[in-house]
Image (tube, rainbow, N blue to C red; front, side):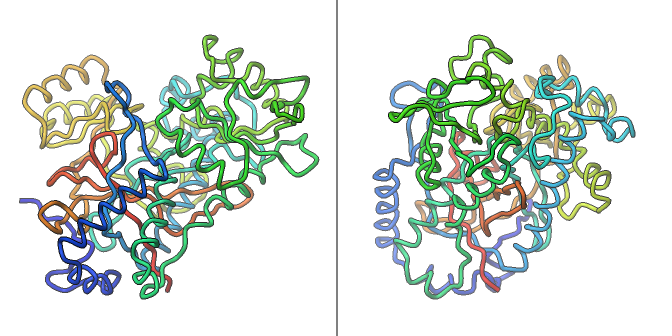
Length: 470
């Protein structure tokens, strides 16, 4: 039987970061716990924090289950994570500037040209263009897992529009409201500066032609999008306008927003829609969500788009395997955080190994997300394994495989009481004139016993993430 690192307990003793939670846990009877859980759900509902699951009948909006037991990191643990995350964000942005420019890493033979230039996320429309401050990915969500006291691995990089930061902020808000004593007894680093840091980051990459205080907007696909709550939430906290494509128009060298007081020039667009929908004159001609002519203004330095079109080539799951090489190539450093060992099915030897060990591995589509298009070998049925065997054989370049990691567990409130459940972590790294991240992130928890799939769309929940002040 696999043994998992429990982040609260070492043997029978409580690990130092969790020391002050032991009494809190023991002093909460089941009735109080259930009452508090109901209170948390009522707060989430009142605030309106829901997400949509596409393809479901009826009302698709649902609450993400919230677990009241916080996940805790010591200041020293976080310091190492922060250094590793910033290092990774620097390397990913250097890679993006390079592959849309001279392509030195490809010329040097450090990454296959096919993986970059034939990648469906590689946007030829921005070849030769360097965004302001040389930043392509302004919000980098790095998904991390832990397997031991000092063992952290990067599971994947999200360089386009990583979601979930509203849960990081609301989880903290609700915990502080429900358990104020806990926050008086523990010195917990705050996360509420995130919207202000995000606004500052976006303003710092204003375009070349901006000669005044930049006007920042959030561009949303609209209220049918699964993350619409987050778009409106962030716009509200940042004090910026939430706009849809129809609210913006291009005139001459600039982009303008329609307002009741007449057109207002927009300098920075934090877009929460995919590249394909940004500009129907450049990408998908049938897009009703974007702004016709936006890319011409972008390339001529009249507006900044964050994250930049084309950033997605850096978070492809096959390209991910080369991020340690990027760190060495661009920064001349060794990676602080390790990748999960990964087999690329596009390589003959890797493919043979994967096909003969499918029942032991996790297989993912290189462009997949949200826990979809994925095989967890040890938990799969024979039919599921055979189905993936057929898919991999038919299109090997579309898949990577990784070992089934022994993800760490944290105590979690479940129907029977308190039990260990597997978790991962998504911190949000903001890249502009500076690279910054708030001390914390989104901890996702697999609420089903034994499950390793933490995605909300697959039944996972969320927790507050604490970083203790040193």
